[in-house]
Length: 274
Length: 280
Image (cartoon, rainbow over all chains, first blue to last red; front, side, top):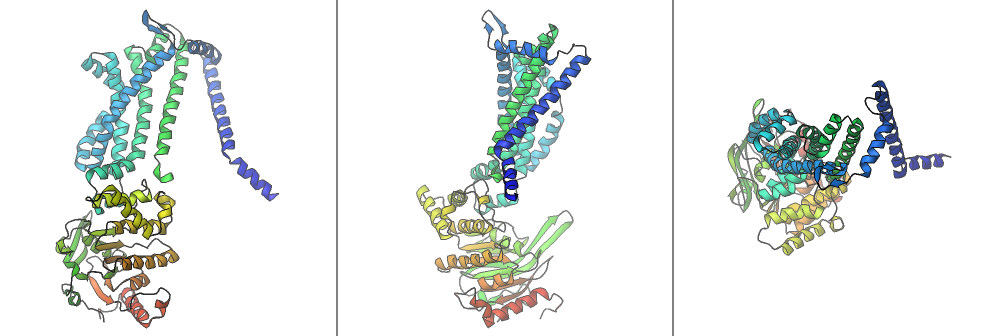
């Protein structure tokens, strides 16, 4: 009897059971969300469209996702609009990363530079992304450019802060290895500083991409330049509220995918758990 | 018998004769702390011969690690000087290999890479093949060939310490500095590590000078030629230097019955645990 109970316990903790359980929790959560949504829809007398109506519209959008009209660039499927937004986010985010990682490493390894730059970062960080969009628009005279600039700036901060923190917290034990065996600066950076700071850097990147993806929607609503955000804004003006909720679901889904991607990257660099 | 240090400025004359490997001359170290200046060690002089094994022993915080760090170059004396292999110590150097208290292996590198990066950094003139061979030879010496591709956190404490020792040996330093190297190991592993360390020292014709910080009296006696007992800090000084006359090769099991061992142990125990006695 006892051994049987033990076996059940082991089975209960198997990978399969965990997956089944997690799937069940996911379904529970979604049900709760849909219930809340339905209630809000009901309470607003269907001003906010319900689940069923949104689903109809979503299916139609999905069916025509990669439609495009060669005569009118603005007349395109939701897939292309989404792709526009993703491209902007990836470009801005990449530029931000290229600046933030080296700068963060320098800040983290030099106390004086940290003291000089930290107040600047702290003052600029809470500035709304839309302010950066406006400044980008003024400086670049191009709204797609301004969008990328906005993403660039917003994805700087978490990466910069996390990278500098990571590098600043390299334990003396690791630094001493470099000192004792006379590591060159290059060897120190590539064999000690970067590997140690990597989990912090990836945490920064994960936060950055999350914020960038959140911000692009608002930016595109303001700029009206293609993308999923401008789609939502046009839908609002046209009274197609189901479209807005569909866009919301798509944004959420892509956001989860991006986060999962970086989470997997984080796992692969967690050297202490290998 | 014991070389008495009547006054800390007195150099231990007995060892000035041939080839001093390390000359510590009137060294004081003062740190700037939040609460003001803290003098860890004061006016310490000590000479260590080539091929000698010397242990620094004392209570926690007595500055024994600080004293050793002045030899490694991790700490620069506030006054006085340290000469290692004829050169004034101005920083860490490849002539002095260090085995740290907590192994200090880089967790993201394999056992092989941990040693290779040190060799690669120190042995600049050697080809990649020669470096590789050197790493493998040292891994062989500490019996870790089977584990060379593992990461440090897959190893037991004793294995990690063997990697750290292999790394220090691989750069072939003439001075080996061990900072409480076996402190975190269980008694059984510790004993076998002592034997292994002496084996490595023998393999090298007892040419390497070894300075070790410890708070384990048995360990100090088994391994050392001399045991330097330090006073409690702040401003720690050398209380006494005890010679260990037990002949080598020493046997871990037999040594405990050796009258010299018993006498030395009693002497050290007295020095370390009777702090109210007047400096005899």
